[in-house]
Image 1 (cartoon, rainbow, N blue to C red):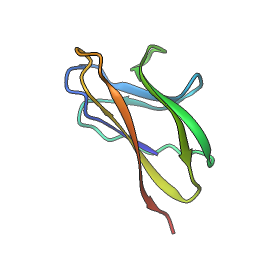
Image 2: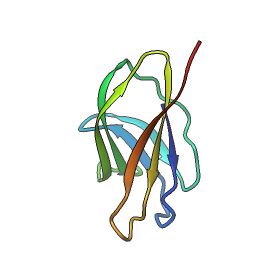
Image 3: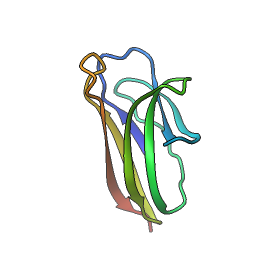
Image 4: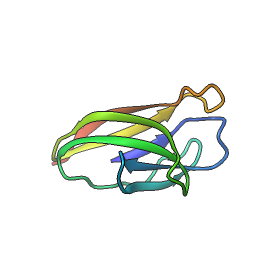
Length: 95
């Protein structure tokens, strides 16, 4: 799992976490792509949080993660309009 931050009007980085749970990826600034986080196959909810805090900015639920696949979560929208959303894509299968 990787994350891409395309939210242009937020100066501090975002963190990605399991919904109501632990952080997965931290410190992803505007137009940055994170390193990877490995998950066990299952269904997850994710939260985008202001970097270094538990303050949720956006969330997405019910995302099925298959074994042997790579996924990217994109954060997009604008903070000023309160319309930040998360989009999960399956990028490829690992061999």
